[in-house]
Length: 243
Ligand SMILES: CC(C)(COP(=O)(O)OP(=O)(O)OC[C@H]1O[C@@H](n2cnc3c(N)ncnc32)[C@H](O)[C@@H]1OP(=O)(O)O)[C@@H](O)C(=O)NCCC(=O)NCCS
Image (tube, rainbow, N blue to C red; front, top):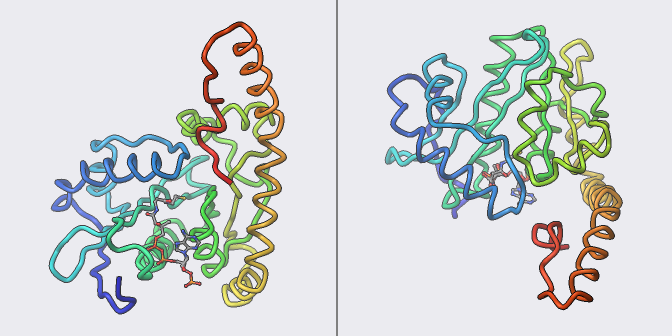
């Protein structure tokens, strides 16, 4: 994919509702390919976001759907999340996610100027983009404590880890933009760029240490089953994580 590909990045409206199904399908298949879970969204939910003007949609110059993201609010508007970021596989690595995130971030700032904007992600691409926008890594305690937000994690393959850590930690890195702190995006971005390899290693170590007890438990279960003569099943967590 050429880096120079041009896209139309638009605030979605009711005229885009026919794209809701393809967006949901792509979100689901991408999550399966990554072996991670997602908070499941229905086409109706996506359509409502479009009608409310709380979503950004991207197309190529030939009007082919290329990407999407939407705004969610929590704790009565005190927190905002830019969720469901998705770029169609054919248009990845051409800077589109960065453009979509910038547009949805500016829209969030306009609609909710006082709100803290946060994200939870395992993706390095998203961490990079968030840093450029001025987000900083934070602990989970700094995020919304709205039950409805955390309920979205139930469909994630790592939900057991989140609950075992009493919602204080999990595989995702939490990042937050607090308008009161006036982060200088350039500073944060430079800091992330300089240390991105370090972040990546830190994430792997953190994820490994979170997974270790579950891997051990799975191994013991497998051993028990093999001893009893049953075929050796693949452990739950080994199915999802390739290091
Ligand atoms: C993650 C995703 C949105 C990135 O979209 P994209 O359009 O390819 O991203 P961009 O081209 O804007 O890249 C932004 C930055 O991340 C980097 N990047 C992109 N994909 C990356 C990857 N898989 N691993 C590491 N870095 C990556 C780019 O090099 C770029 O960095 P740079 O500014 O230093 O050049 C896309 O891969 C996708 O839709 N994945 C499936 C859904 C998903 O994971 N959504 C995020 C949920 S939190």
